[in-house]
Image (cartoon, rainbow, N blue to C red):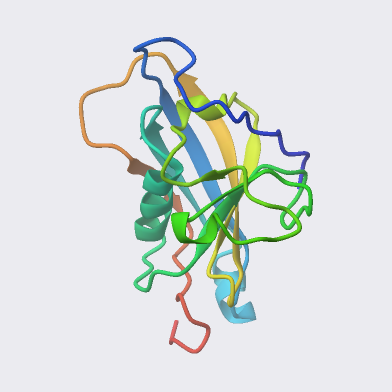
Length: 172
């Protein structure tokens, strides 16, 4: 994976009152996927548009729904050089924020807006879902637009490949 950009810790929009639209391409890069499924679906990605005033928690729900998941699990977003980068700035669930650890999180998923992360086209970051099955996703920032059309966001605008079963023992 290419070098990931470190996120800012500021949690206010960069331009007062201005809301941007972010287009993010979310790829599954690892998880409990069978070889048979992977051969039929070499790329599993979803393109999601999200408003800058929405949060990482909103992005989690969009990814969860976009890949057809049914059971909630712990998750976090990481802004390091690669997945599991021990020095990566991390945003975690509120219930995990106060846990003492080697790399304490810099924030909670329900607090920063997407805009406050100061993402730019070409930036990449990671989403880790289900710490037991270890579903890893790479998120690429594809576009940042100054105008947000009317409609409900976040929303999926493109799907490539089928959604793998959430649990490896489910039928394909």
